[in-house]
Image 1 (cartoon, rainbow, N blue to C red):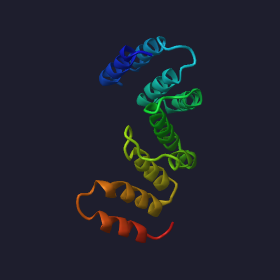
Image 2: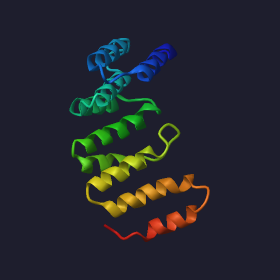
Image 3: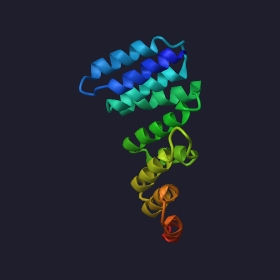
Image 4: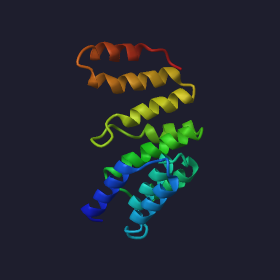
Length: 159
């Protein structure tokens, strides 16, 4: 796809308004119609639109299809994080944890995977582990007390 299509996608998301779900879906479908058949990006963008509209059950299969078809280095971690977040919201924290534990921080998503992992761990009852993950993700951003925060995180009791 061209940079023009990416610009249209960026514009779509900058102006998306969840108060008109039909328009959101109509507009994203028009954009993804410009993609070649079986393009992972089309499935990812449609999944994201369904997620945006709280149609989470519909989003899951689309995220999975996007990942199976393949995504670029920018969209793949986003798709995994969004899929995991959606699974968590649907009460499937265990699967969300499995997905998120495999992700590292990257230039596109930063420490988002660790933030969502902490939420999924918390939801699964692993509150101490959730706090450890959150503190370890936060620590590198601290101008002061980084070492102390990491030390306290390591001292938290096991779940």
